[in-house]
Each structure stands twice: as C-alpha cells, then as structure tokens.
Length: 200
Image (tube, rainbow, N blue to C red; front, side):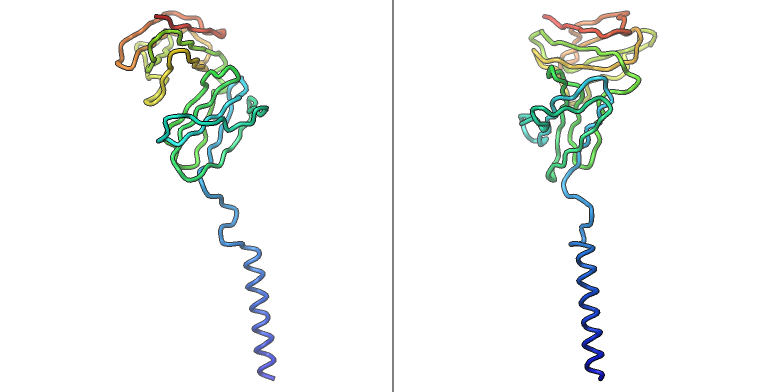
C-alpha cells in the first residue's frame, strides 16, 4: 500500500517536472542573446543600406538589408548581432549617409531623422579634403553650436552626407580634421531642400 502510494507520488513529481521543463525551456525564456540594433526611420526618405561593422574593423562590410529590402519612412527594423561592439552607418538609395552611431555594445535604437526636420541639406564633398566638422546654426543664433558630425564621423572626398533640418535660415560651416575652416555660407534659406557642394 505505502509502496504504491510512493510510486504514484514519484510519477506525479516526474510528470510535473517534465511539464515545467517544457514550458520554461532552458530557462532562457523569450530573451535573445547578442546585441539588438534597431533602425528607426523618422526621415522622409527610404533607407536602402544599413552597414553594421565591429568597431575594431577598418571596413564597413556587407549591407545588412537585402538587395530589394527598404526601411520606409515611419518603419523600423531590428538587427540581432553577435555579442560585440559595433559601428552603424545608414544610407539612402543614392548612398548618401543619413545617420551613424558608434561603439554600440548594448541594445540600441538608431534614430534616423526627425518628424519636425523636413528639409534635406545634402553635403556633397567634391573637394580633396576630408571634412571632420559641420556646423549648421540658425542665422538668428549667436554662435555655431555643436558639430553635427560627432566625434567619429567624417565626410571623405567624393562622399555624400544628408542632414535633416527644421525649415529656417541657417549659417553653414565645414572644417577639416585640424579644425581649419574650409568654407562658410551665411543666411542660407533652408525652407526647401538644398545641395551644398564643397570644392577645393
């Protein structure tokens, strides 16, 4: 009698533990390993290229989007990468850089554009000099404000860089990597899209 009860209890414990194991999996649940990098497109343009490269690499590597894949305005896409530290460059269909992010080691959202910034300023670097600093300041301001490029980004010779601004009148400045001014423009009407070409 006691033995049959013990066997029955042991069977119940075994069934219960198997059920818990099946429901809980290996304890990982719904969590994913690696680094999730979300590209959130708040710009008015399609994103055609997403380059994600380990930060210690000298090259960007392959595009993470398929050849026919796009991230439309208002859409987002998340890329799950192996555990590492990454740099990200986002480009439109003309391969103009729209946004960059550097040294990403944790789950991160890279926001491209802003719903209020509806005017495109396209910088085309046709000079022989690498541009390291870009200042886009409202003409009503008293100083240049912050560099729009950040600490790591540059516009190399032959490269395109796209910035999104709120409609206004701006002063523009581009400088080389020594901080020497290459060119300045004042009272630039940016209520419509503009291409700013840099020459020698």
